[in-house]
Length: 355
Image (cartoon, rainbow, N blue to C red; front, side, top):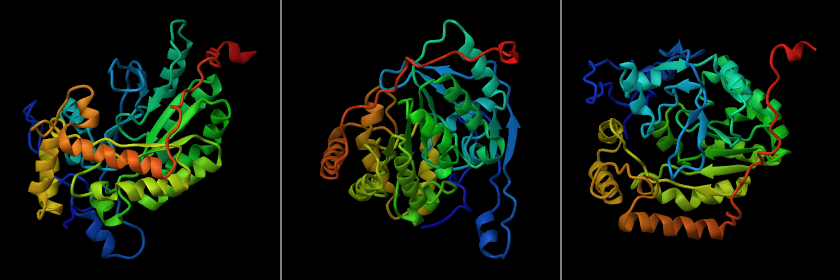
């Protein structure tokens, strides 16, 4: 199993859809880290400030359980090779490969924009989802704290919130989340794709260790915060054999339920994933892609609603059967979580806060 210096992508090619120029990848910082003592070398990651006009994104996708979302950041330093958000970097004339992991965008105006949008008389109160595109708790959140500021506003206004993350950094906001949980205003989904640190190191190179994520599920549960587990994506012939073990561990930690999605390879993610396979799993690259194509109707990816989340064919049926049996065996499941929407109170304007 090979490596790529702590980055997920092994290439930094431009999007073939937009005819962008080729870009070079960063150096092998992980080898440097392992060869020195003391502090690790400074990562070659840049953050550009972005000033959007609005911050709440709305969608009408029939196979997604939310219609409002907020993304404090673009790009993600976690570097998950399978990330379906990678193609969005093409819109910035950047590569979905290494650029997506190293050239990040932050939206420090997000809290101000959110407050303004929540003050509008026409705002419809449904749960706002965070972590639907890139992770709100990726490493730069430590310094920018945009996610926390957003949660502070949602807590203040008693607005329902869903969070999806693969980072135990969510525990830094446990005070706010516990307060919201007491009024049934928040649910947290923590992603654990593999229990094998060697697999996670290449699949999700800068995401926290799997055991730290399991521990975070336990901490959230102990704090009374409804926590769920995602073992997505399931990668055939690489992580699928761990399905039952993953479900057992998250259940023991206190997750209320779990779900999974077979790996998706939209647009530029497919060639990046193929190159990653050839680097890290050359012995089974052909087998992996063969099963994925079987799951996706003979293609690398199936973008159709419904199928894109479940897959199709015999492999999809097999994975679903195993998953359902494991959920039942380890006591997961129950009523679907529904957050309260009747406690919302619009934020006060600056003038009102003077009195």
